[in-house]
Amino acid sequence: MTESLLLTVVSVLVAVVLVEVLLPTFNNLLNIKLSINYYSSGYWLGMLLVILFTGILSGSYPALYLSSFNPIQTLKRNTTNAKAIPISLRQVLVIGQFTFAIILIIATLVIYQQVQFIKDRPVGYDISLLAEMPQDGELGKKFNLFKSELLKSGAVTALCQSSGSLSNDGSSFWNFEWPGMTEAEKQVMFNQIATTYDFTKTNGITIVAGRDFSKAHASDTAALLLSSSAVKIMGLKDPIGTPVKYHGNDFTVVGVFKDFIWGSPYYTDRPMVIAFTEGWGGQITMRLNPNNSISKNVELITQVTKQINPAYPVDLKFVNDLFATKLQDERVLGILSNLFGGLAIFISCLGLFGLSAYSAEQRTKELGVRKVLGASTASIIQLLSMSFMKMILVAVIIGVPAAVYLMNKWLSNFEFRTSISWWIIAAAIFSTSIVAFLTVSFQAYKAAKANPVDALKYE
Image 1 (tube, rainbow, N blue to C red):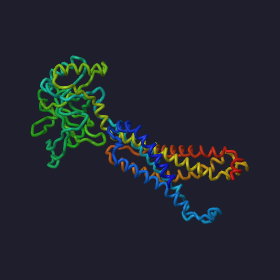
Image 2: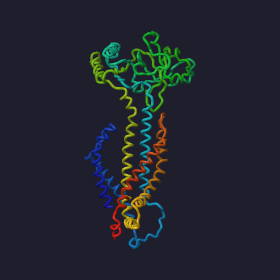
Image 3: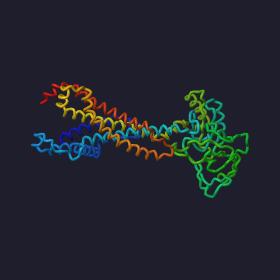
Image 4: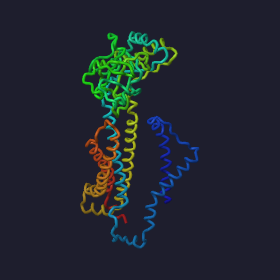
């Protein structure tokens, strides 16, 4: 028990040093501010409890097991009593360690595959070279001047004003009315964006039928666009020209656009309405000039903005960065699962290395006799490795179904989700087996290459 507690104390000291070294990186990864309060009595009490719990738990089995030996039977090496359970605690621990390692490897690969699947899902608009800023102060009153000055500067190729950002979902409404609708369909929720001109041109949204709002059509002051999903829900076979009631006012559908991701990339958005509504601006979106550098465009935009709206700071944000934040949680989860999966494999290999070294030491004389009788190095490595590889096989049989079940449950939380590919299972099994085999083989090779004379004169 004393030896176990002493080892635990040393381990805790090493762990504290590692935590201090790695904590800044961890805080930066999760965007949090964790720290260790060494002046807190609760911290030291918790540390003491960890030492006692770990030391006693790890030391109790060998201590109680050794103290329960009958000295006479031990000295006589009485091994005639058969085991009631044909598996040792060491085997259970090895199997348990590698079962968790396999689960973590599969979980890491599935999380990575899911994040990539969502990242590859079409956004529905062109997020490259797209920037936005709030329409504060004079920008609301002097938007047309701001637009003409920016276009003249060459910093942007198009810009528009709208009630919200494409990077984050916003307003929704119900009680939308169209010909042939049922009473129950009045309760259908629609997303909405209010804008004026050049909305689809600036954002790179695809018009699949009809057209965008245009100054050439005076009637467009009472026009709107529908998303493809809205047309489908409304059951409109020929939506262009359909009269509708939007917030109690008469509007006409002039175009249909392809659905784009407005809310979470993991779920289907509500059907959307884009309405021509002047005076409802809250956001200015700009398509930057690809012929200039990003810094040059930002510099020109800042100059024009400060001239027209000097009382407010220039708060320019890039839409691709804003969209990336939607995947932040899964990205962090993927990094953490990589780290802890690697740590689990490393700890499992440490345990396996210790057990293989212990097994080789116990069989020192046996290995010496085998070498004297002509056993090759390869046969001795195989002899020492096979028992451990059988335990890894059991861990695979337990870990793979458990991991598949757990990750299928996790994937069921997403409307858009990938499936668990066969290569993920194969990669987990192969990597675990290779790492375990190399760990055991290293110790087995040392034992096999030892001088048999030293082994036979051991006692």
